[in-house]
Length: 204
Length: 188
Image (cartoon, rainbow over all chains, first blue to last red):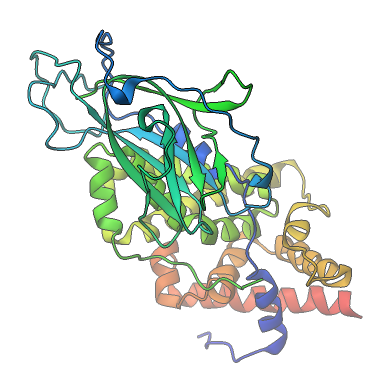
């Protein structure tokens, strides 16, 4: 019979040293999220000729994020296309890959290609006190799309209805620092700086 | 630098997040990654001895958990389930590395932990501790970390590892004896 060991200051000191946190690569979260397989196969539809306000393109000059290194707590960024319950009727053409987790019925109905898709953006920024989503869908106005801190771990989230199409965006942290999304392709603006690009597709 | 507390094996809202992910909201998985990343990274790094292997093991554990999420029987205890996946992954990685060579060089762990608060001798001491830790039998190292670093009780350890409490106590005892012997020698 082994009894619980008594307090040993030497072992306690060893344990204390080993309890210090270790840092992961700043893009760890983004790498994990980028490696996740989609749960359904997205169906690509043609863009509408109409261009509503959230489809207008707008280039924005963004200085490279010098503070990114300083903001070591800025762990990663992901943006995912999600279809929420209550999405427009008549918009489901679902194709489930083998073994997919999503339990949605396969249907064959008319696609309303102009119906907005709920697009969620998530930023992991534990030390941020405010985060906004800025993009060509909001005229790059940081006051329009304030993100909500959704966990104590520093995850900020916002879900925006977007018509299928291609959009450029960034995140604005603490009202001053703009960062791109390392998990998404980036494009150069006419001023030479990069924005993240998300292509919103119908998926049902 | 603040010292992290023990493993957060249960967190409010895990079941809801798991349900969201299973309903197709893949992005919600980022919340679980953010929630468990830090503590599990420490465990993996201490078990494997370097950040590269630890990150690989941790990323693999998160991906395996995601792919098998529908099989998570108690989503409210997602953290425990994920940890079991990680612990298995660390054992596999440890066995693989053992077949190669025992390497612990003055790099990741010590340097990552280093800061202005910890001058060189502190870093060297921490490096010696990690080196000694890696000289333990793997099952002893695991038991020691769970008990003394992650502050788990023996019942929790038994649940996580599938090993009986008596055997775990023996492993911890032997780990302590071995560490004491290895590190006292360094101190002399």
